[in-house]
Image 1 (tube, rainbow, N blue to C red):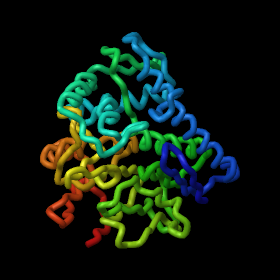
Image 2 (cartoon, rainbow, N blue to C red):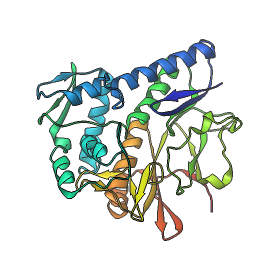
Image 3 (cartoon, rainbow, N blue to C red):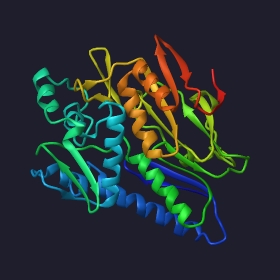
Image 4 (tube, one colour):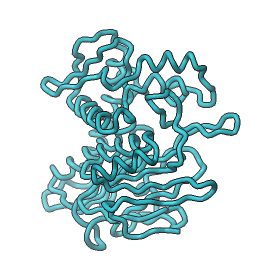
Length: 336
């Protein structure tokens, strides 16, 4: 069974084998879409009425009640901030706005040094707290603002998988915005085979692969071979990819990525073209992809080795792309 739809400014898809007690596909599709709509209502910075936007607008340093999902995502974000020593930081929203990557932003304008310095005073993951009982967020500085877009798609993918499991589905591949969660087996054997897209110079988010007509096959997803850097078989694992080619602008002959360094207030300039992370949690893989990208290759490789992470780095070497994977990366096919 294959389903797909739209969410969070991107697409989602689900491929699964229904169990005896699984509801009809139309009911499953409605349930998955409703879950995604609820998450977007909670965590979108593009909606002024979302729980997150209301927290950002609040000028209070007391605990601010939020839905449990939002508190869970912020708690996960803070864990990855600590792991990456602040390279991953969801309080970068002032910088996102300043550089034109947020709601109503205009890419292409270069902020001044004084504007960057002012925005940086509002950034810092240690200024944010999350609790689950009752679910709430707290900021230690009234003008702190949060952007969860770097891990919300991964969390949403986890939620879709959990919802399918609640309907007795054991074999499935779901993704939101290109972040995959796989459980059980596809029709072609153990696990699910998915692809890592080859970085390119074009801007824009990856299109949801399973939502592309005619490109879904019985055991997974196979887009045209030239677009893939590698394929991987996921066995009860998740895969998330972060790339500098997805969202950027150019000015004065330089490329400025949407990956903003919370330590400098500026877009990352790195040899990393993309980072793909395999993990049990899609939310964690999603956040790690961004954090490793911001760390830069040498520090990211050291972290991946220390934490025994399955990571594929695609690096820019002039006009060439080179690949380096950790020993925990379950790669099965490499493309030239």
